[in-house]
Amino acid sequence: MQQESICSEIPVLHFYSLELLMAIIKGMRSQFLPHAAYIVRFLKQYMKRCALPELRTKVYSTIRALLISMGVGKLVLEYFLQLVLVLRFVYSIVLYFLLDGNIIQVSSIIMA
View 1 (spheres, helix red, strand yellow):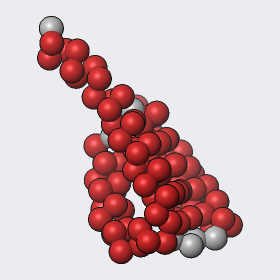
View 2 (spheres, rainbow, N blue to C red):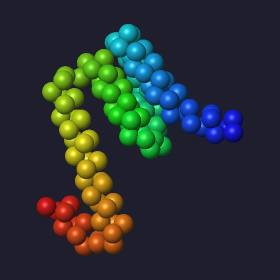
View 3 (cartoon, rainbow, N blue to C red):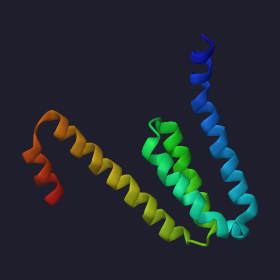
């Protein structure tokens, strides 16, 4: 019973940890630059494991805050985020067709 309670709280703890990380990034701004590689590596690994959409959205927001603090222009950032959304959409379509067994249609969608 106690283990189930702890496991149900883990996503909430992850969410607040990402909130804390974002606050640190926003507070330190360019002073955070020497540590950016570690954070990017952490967020990259976290994205591979993260399954909840709310947490993935929070990770994208954290990446956005990190890129802005590193001096990336907003136009470049918006382009990057749109590219990520398009790639996620294409990936979901590919998975849908692969799971459905229509592999031929996948190649025609990717080539279009």
